[in-house]
Length: 259
Image (cartoon, rainbow, N blue to C red; front, side):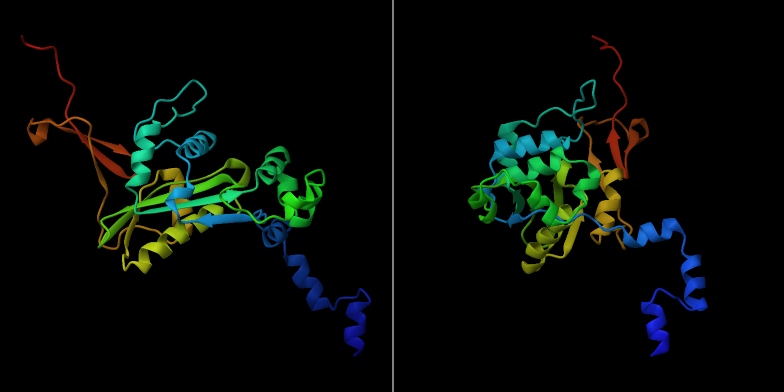
């Protein structure tokens, strides 16, 4: 009882003081650092909830290109995806996952500093005092929400599937929304008894997919991507170039035409 009273009175026994002293400031920050809570969101697996125009806007905001070799402007921004091809890709995707949030909430996160983004949802509500109360308490739906996250999978509907185009609006990154998208895709695929699931990603995206449970193939297979040009030249005359972890097979540059 006396020991308990001493602790509550602000006194720590020597062994606890020694343990506290061994914890560095960086360790304390690492222990207390938590990802910011996501705002209220709605996750849908209904492809009809995705407006191709809104998805193209999300691609632009996320600087995400659906092309293998996108053109970049002087600021390093990718070219807008072709809207017709995007519609076709959506119509042929086996799984489409979209995430929606209230536009006013997204605006509050976009205009706030990174430190204020890590505050609790109560501070988020205080930032929205000027918003109509009825609009704030209404649940998020695809009709009143803004598209803030997306991901899709292409499958043969029997054995294998591949995940593509996972993206989250920059203002809401680091809150676990991307992992929610991937987990929802995997849940839908495994419910269809499909477990051979791959994720096509760049090197900078690999750590994200590793956190979602992806890794090197246990069979040691390597993804090889088809080059743009078909060549009939001998294998010794062809060149292999590396794009991230993928190998691209392409013919050597052609010389001037003999004719």
